[in-house]
Amino acid sequence: MTSTSPAATPVDAMLAAARTMDERALRAQLRDEARALGVNAAITDVVLPFLNALGQAWERGDCSVASEHFASQVTRSWLTGAAVGDPDASSTAMDPVVLACPPGERHDLGLLCFHVLLVRSGVPSRFLGSDTPLPGLANVCRAIGASGVVVAATRRRVFEAHGSALQVLARQYPLAIGGAGADADIAENVGATFLPADMRRSLAHVVRWHRGEAGGITVSA
Image (tube, rainbow, N blue to C red):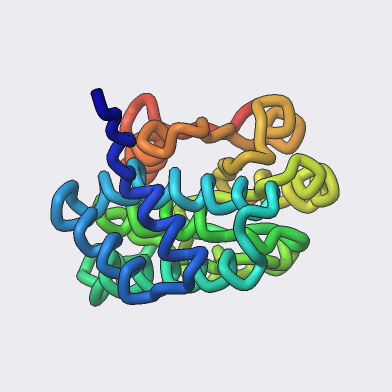
């Protein structure tokens, strides 16, 4: 009897393309998954697990820094291009949700995924990306009439380093925090709402929050 190895998953195929820096293969996999699952499901079920696996491979030494950067940029290009497309009326409306990573946080692809999901859910969103100065973030929110702010970081110490600035921001705008570095204790300390790791649940929370529906995000006491 002969044994067969299990079929490679989409994440496995994407990791292989990342290691060999095969842009054509990586883009094709992203395109195929979006066609098969829909963009939203492709992001939550394939892209996010891929980014997590890519980071773990880098930490183990199974993936070079160059390969990790390459794959991240290809994924970023897909997210900002094919996934979002041209802004529609909802994404250019006032009272958007503002998304940012605080100073010291350069890993913003997870937050970019969230931005895409928000836009595709009809919630206007402004993505500011990594290393965003928090004292000036309130000015941005004021200028564009933001309905609230989501701040994300992959490390707890990044939130701790900017606790005072987050408290000030939370007194001015509804604030939610998320990412691997966030937890309920930090959220309570700064007066924010903690977004769960499950991006589908976080998306549902913020959509309800933006619509002003019961059960949406509320600022912690």
